[in-house]
Image 1 (cartoon, rainbow, N blue to C red):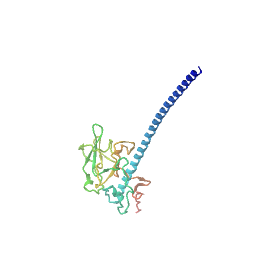
Image 2 (image 1 turned 90 degrees about the horizontal axis):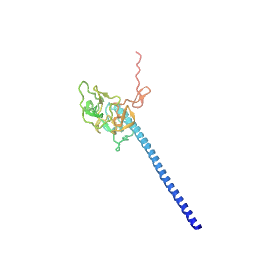
Image 3 (image 1 turned 135 degrees about the horizontal axis):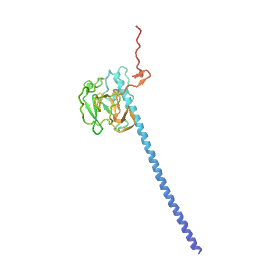
Length: 257
């Protein structure tokens, strides 16, 4: 009798222990699942932070090229560099280097930039709402590579031709300082988007068509951000635009007659 009761109690205890082990196993699985969800939630913001940092780096590096090209022009009688490496060479009367380092494009795997070439580009808006880019010749600067005369937008009532999309920017407007046409949604960029090494380089841009976290000069897409002294004014000092060497431009005082 006693032995039978002992065996019964043992079965009850073992069943209870097995049930507890099953509950513990389920709780372990639930905990692992929650941990995995939390890790995934943490990884996404980290990638966003890295993307934001690259965006800031794009602006910094692009503006460095803008000012380097501006200094190059001012020290070399208005000529543009024909290779990015020219910005690393001492030149001009002061024999200064315009950049200490050739920055890569933070959004390109090969680090290469899109180059802005002499000429103009007419921007029209297609029926699907996307911009169409039509390069227009070389303008005044193509025949004389060292010229600093900005290309003039077309005038008169003639309608600009509409060409193929060159795969440039994805926005719908011209950046600040760009010439604008007189017809509806027509804009004129003061350069072409198909520049190459060996030709005058008016600036650089990123070819990535992706919406940015923050606008740059009222533009929302990376491939709308053109870094060129033709469209970005020089930085302002306390007394005016900063000239090469860091000296603000000041007006000359007239001597009393």
